Length: 548
Image (tube, rainbow, N blue to C red):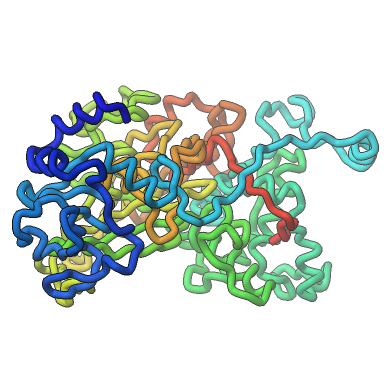
C-alpha cells in the first residue's frame, strides 16, 4: 500500500487507533499467529476461547469480559475473527495495513475465504461426446427413431418424452411428481443412458423374469427399476397415456401406511420416492450411503444439498455450527397479507420476469415472492428467554441468535411452499391460497453460507471448520423447469404440473398434455418448484462412477 493511501486510511480510522499507530513504530501489527498455542487463555481469568483479544501493546490476552480492563492499552485483535478491536469505542475498527499483515502472516493469498490447507476439488470443463464412425454405425443399425412426425404421433406436436399419465384413482399427486422427475435433466440423463438397468437389477436380486403376476407377487419392489420402466415407456415414441400401476404398487410396498386410493400430499410423496430409491440402493450395496456428500444414490446425488445452522450466544458471542443434509427447502408464506416484509426489498437479481397482472389484482402491495421467502429462511432469528440454549463457553443457558444458510446447493433445488397449515392447539387445518411470485431465473448467491459469512464478518473472513469457498460460482445460478400446483381445498384438490421443454411450457394434467403461455405459469399457485443449475461443474475423477 502506498504511503498516501496508508495516511488516508489512518485519518479515516478511529482516533484511538490513529494514536496507537503514531506511537507504535514501523511494525504496529506484530502479534502471535491466531493458530499459535500462546494465545489460548485469558490472562485475567484463564478462560479458554474462542472469543479472545490479543493486545497489540503487550503480550497479554483478554476474554470478552476483561477486554476493556487493560490499563491504557486500547487496541487489540479479535483472534477468532481476525479483526482489530478498540476497547474505548467497544467496536471493531478497520485498517488496510492490518489486513495485508494478517494475510501475509498466515501465508495465504489475499482473497476472501482463502483455502487453508484443504485441497479444493479440481473441476474440469465439460466436453460433449461425439460418436466415432464405428459407434455411429452401431447406433444406426441397432436403434429405432423415437421422435415420430406429427402425423405418426396422431396429430401431437410435443417434444419426445412428453406423455400423459392415467389417473388410477386419486393419483394426481403421483402423476404430477412423476412428470417433474421424468424431465429433471440430470435424472433423465442418468436413466436414459442405462445407468440403472432394471433387467440387470432384477437379475442381481434373483427376480424371475415373467413371474410378474397381476397382484404384483414375485416382483421386486425396486422404485428405481419401475422408474426406469416409465422412462422407457414415455420416451418410446408412444403418445397414448401411460398407466404407472407397477410404480404405484412398488411405492405402496415402500410406504405401507400410505397404501390407499385416497389423495396424498405431493410433497410427502416426492420425499418418500427419493428415500425409497436411496434405501434400496443402500441395501443392494450392503453399506450405508452418505447423504449430502455426493457419494450416494442417483436420487440424492441430484436433489441432496446441505444446510448450515449457526447459533450464537448473545452474551459471549460463542457460535455453534451444525450441518444437516436436505432434499428440499420448505418455505413459509407471509402470515399477514398487508404486513410489511422483506419481500419488497430489492436485490440485483429480483426484478427478473416481472409480475402477472391477473394474479396480482386485488392482492395489494405486499405480494409474497420466492426471494422474500428465502430472505426469511436465512435471516437471523433471535431465540427469546423461553428458548434459551446451553452455551459451552458460558456454561449456562443463554439467549441466542440463530441463522440458517445453504452450505451446498444440489444439482436440482426443490422449493416446497407450506400451503397446508395444521394447528394442534386449535385442532384445525387450512390451505393458504395466496399468490406467490417466483422467477424463471434465480440467483442463490445471497443465501449461500459463504455469502452470509462474508456479510457477517467482512470480506476477508477465512474458512471455518473446513468450509469450502463458493466464490460466486456459476452453480448458484438456477433455472426453473417444473412447477407443481394444487387447486381446490385441503381435503379435495387436484395437482397439475407445468413443464418447461425446449423453451416452451406444457401443462400436464394427468392424461392430458397441452401447451400453455408462460403467463399462465407465472400466475399459477406454486406448491413445489424445481430449479436446475444453469451450468454444471464437473469433478475430475480417476474412477468410473457406479451405476446406482
